[in-house]
Every structure is written in structure tokens, then in C-alpha cells.
Image (tube, rainbow, N blue to C red; front, top):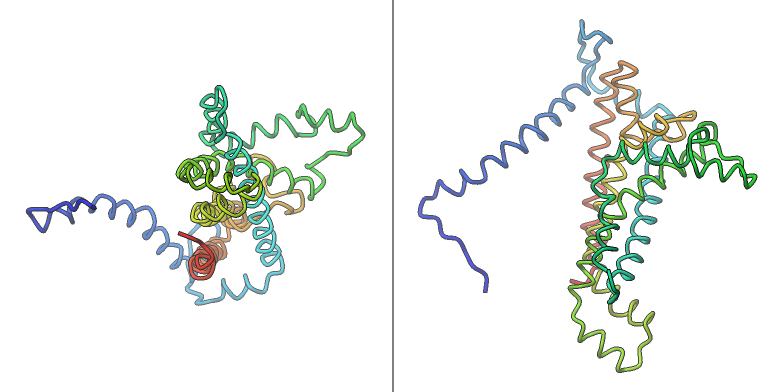
Length: 293
């Protein structure tokens, strides 16, 4: 039976949520509103003159083939990061859920990478795979593999995907492990008594019961790949070589701060926000039907 809090004053509930509303208004809605206004303006690089240009920034942006290339690149990155991080996290969670000696220690080691900031993740992977500094890079060259992500766009993209997926595995692992431990052991034991092998028990019982967790993590991972990989890209490749790792969020920074084109940068941020909102709404509208709660 759910407990319900009863407030003596009708004003008190609104006062309690007021700090949270103030934080959301100041740190989300106000910057978002500023970006929308800025997307209709054109400023010089020094901010000395401003002209209202209606939808010119959007028209120029949608006529730019580099922008469409950045959209496709971002979706490809998001798919690769979400698929690899979710798959590996689920595998690790299933293994960690078994009764093993020292399992708490293993789980703690798997959770630690989530506490590492994205720029630090980039530095760590530079020490491993940078062609001049990386320990693994030296080993790859010793094996005859021409590894140089500073010049090869495909290798640079692979490097970003590996680093971003590694950062997100710990987060996914936590939710998968909690989901696995919430499944009643009696259900799995009954299936085992009926003769179901481990793989059949996983795909017919465990995986469907994990579907709410998987659905939630798909949304979180896509949003992470769109927005939170900026620090990794800026640290490791700065969008290069030849824009091979320039995603939408990094292009907003590159055109706005480095290129001085504030109007185009604001229009890009508005479109990026619209893409993420539409993607999330699509997932809740259509993918949720396949989820068994």
C-alpha cells in the first residue's frame, strides 16, 4: 500500500519544488531560449553589430553538405557506442551476477570507470593508442598494423567509439546488475527444473524481464552519445582528421567558438535539441510497445 504525504498547508508543496524548478529554469530553459533567439540573429565575430535575419541561418545550414555529413556521422557514432556499451555491459552483468568468491571486489572495479570525467577518459586512451605515446599503438606497429588515428579518419572514429563506449559500460553495468538481481530466483529455478538450458533461460525469461531496463538505457546511451562525448572528442581528435570525428555537438562548438559564426552555431544547437527530443519521443511512442513491464 502506497503511503501518501499530507501537507497541512497548500503552499508548502509548491515551496518544496521551487528550488528544483528554479534550477531547471535557470540552467535549461533560459539558455535554450537564448539559443532560439540567437539563431535568428547574425553577429560579427566581435559582437559589435547584430542583425535580425529571420531563418537565414537555418537556410544556410540546411544547404551545407558538411552539416548533413555531421548528422549521419553522429547517428553512426551513437548506434556504435550504444550497441557496444550495452552488449558488453550486459555480458559483464550476467557474469558478475553469478555466485563467485570476491564478486563485490569485481563489481567495484567495473563501476569505477563511471567516475572518470570524459576529458580524462580521452587522456587515458591517448596514453594507450596515440601513435607516438600509446603503449598499445607501439604493439600494433610491432605487429605490422599501420595504426595512426591522427591521419586515418576511420581509425580516429574507432578510437572515439572505443573510448566513449568504455566510459558508458560502467553506467549500463550498474542498471543491468540491479535488473538481474530483481528477477525472482524461483522463476529461473522453475525453468531449470523444466529442462531449459542456460541460453534458453536467458533469452526466454531473463532478457524479456530486462526489457524495461534495456529500453531506458537505450534512451540514456543515445543522449550520452549525442551530448556527453564532446570532452572525449575535444581531448583526443578535436574533430579531425578532416572532420572525420566532428559530431553535431562538436560542430556547434567549432563553428560558434572557433569560427565566430554565432548565429549558425545557435541554429545548430536548436536543431540538435529538436533531434534529441524527436528521437526520445519516437522511442517512447513506438519502442515502448515492445517492452514487457
